[in-house]
Length: 248
Image (cartoon, rainbow, N blue to C red; front, side):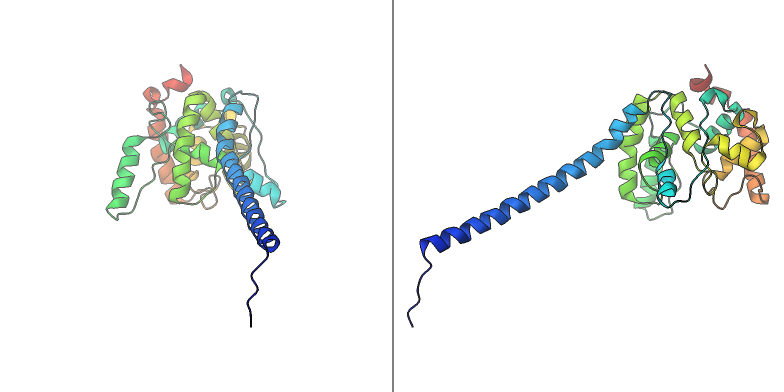
């Protein structure tokens, strides 16, 4: 049987189809790449947009609650309307070097990396800028991917925002219980007072509940939580040199 070769027209059609598939595939990958770049850049754009005090952003957890039709309670308050007791307690509990570092506490971070490389259990090294970046732009859960994204966001936010604005944002988006966000909602929910009227004890209880606000109930503290609050209350009473960047 004779084998009849493809005609030139058939070869041209086959070649044209191959080129068409290749171009479509390249266009699709370019589109995916552009979308990925836009998603990566968006938080840095939002950092600039969130700088003015009249902007009241929501966190990714608040957005989740909205998407799941749960709703949430958050009443924005200006930094000046938050009790200094809470500011001091949160700083001494979460980030004692807040006024000194550039968004990342590199001394603590090096310790965490060393422990991880040696196979030891790692301790927390998240600063308030890192936690604020996570709350506004990222997700909960421990992962190296999230931490890698968190670091440059924290550095950028600390460069763009004043320390006072950073603390204002953090205290207005932090979670203090299921569907309870921000200092005002937390103060009213747990103690029946506005954020401006929090006592030293109440502020310390809110501060020590931050690492796990679902299980740690500031309004109904157990013995362990009360003990931690007493420690933070003592530290907060001696925090004068640590909070100068906020109250000078």
